[in-house]
Length: 287
Image (cartoon, rainbow, N blue to C red):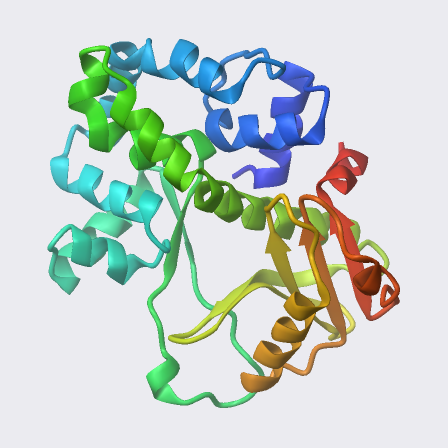
């Protein structure tokens, strides 16, 4: 199955975006859809033209993938707008653990979802920190559809996009951030060529989430944080990342920060072999 980065490469080859922000934000919505778009146009314009105006046609194609099952749709929407944890989506859909397990297995079998477990730490951790698996959409477009289109299908089907626009504006930041984390994980995996990564994912428990937790061939531990905001990353984010890693007893060898807009001068001065800094612009080097 293609990684997010491979899909991103394919998307950029097809659509030739001029900036990495255009590339990423368009990919987060249209990735895996296969449609050719003009990334220089405003994102909302492209969404209306290629998705909302084509609702009935696209809906028919998606029904074929989901068998038109309302329970599947409910779970997929819960995953698209929530924290991606299985138990959260099943609770939203009012499913029992047994029924939920069957639904999730089917959605993974259909190729719509991939399962991720919280990364294991090399020590025994207390049982109360056991958490639910996360479930990620294989296709960015499908996550967009079930997060913003499917729940508002009545208005969209009638050509009324006002509620969609409000929902997208309010949740765009969170939506982009989750997509940024998954793409960043693949980017980091590809860029550690001297000491290849053998395990990559996230860590989460009931109190802490760490976007990147990886191990290299030589046994080094990498811990990282990703922020898709219009502000530069400041030292307080690095301090929090270090505190979180210490709290869960992650003996990190390398810290990584990945930012949309870059870093404060204070953070830049700390860049070293044990602190690596990347921005969205670095993603171009992987194309």
